[in-house]
Length: 398
Ligand code: V47
Image (cartoon, rainbow, N blue to C red):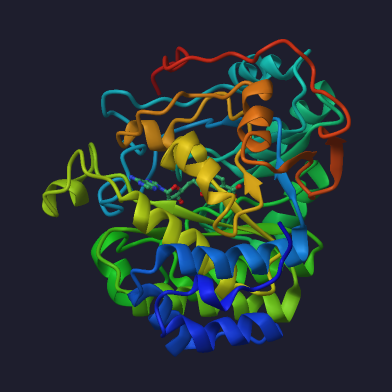
């Protein structure tokens, strides 16, 4: 299929003027975004996003052989980030903090597996200092020199700057010297002050999140960006959020991929308050957010679907709704499984390749910088499957 726009595919007349802008490569404005959120013509919206995506990425769909590491779930924002099921207070049941040796032991799974990226995030621990993280990055680089390290959200960077009494720039510089490749996009949630007051009262503000990412981009550290949708936010809040991301990207060009994150309501205060426990976002909503992200963020090169959160089946369909990037092998996902996700904790490399191929697309294994590592279309992947398990690995209490 090529990237030609078919106006007949747009059932909702409100999509036609937007389709014309997409055809001409013109930027969508706030009113266009509201019309996209209001439409029930999901297939028409998906067609527009598919055209926009294929124009840049063609048939290619990127994926990574990655491993998530979560060194601690202890977080000083435990009481106020009401949407989060991962965080614990230091003495709470299930709280853990890994020693560096324990982190290295978990990362050993990367040896002999085709891992190209460690994705490292955790809580805002009151006592873990910058040196813990710089030592961790150096230790991982020594043991796995070719693996890229995508580590620490903007919120963790700002927290480290605060407890070290140094600037965010200095924290980022120290991490870069220790081996950091890029920053993940977490902690953004929704930038609206009113929404943050409800779901993440004491977290970094939207402007502060943007400031950390701007500083990272200035230092040559590329980053990802996210939006947490499906809780108390309005379409207007979502669009303001996307506009702030788009404005920073115009300025720096430092965002690599955008990942819409679907709110999961289990085992957190917000889910109980909203009466939503056991009821995550719908497939319609998930595909809409993927497609609108692709259309609105016309300057961000990739849009990623996080399969542990929306299921591999929906991620596969998302490839026809503007998405060109699939979360990787993961080994082991904790943030969403604590919040009720029922997907596997990891995906085998061959299964990931099959998911993309069966959607009629060309799987390209990438590293953290989106450089092609293996074009799997021409080069069949290694046969052995990676660990697939629903069980959390053993952790040690803090
Ligand atoms: O910042 C926390 C979200 C994020 C819940 O950059 C929740 O490649 C839904 O950012 N329901 C962390 N979401 C995950 C993240 C991420 C994931 C995959 C890839 C990348 C990347 C980044 O998860 C948090 C928060 O926005 N989150 N709790 C919940 N109950």
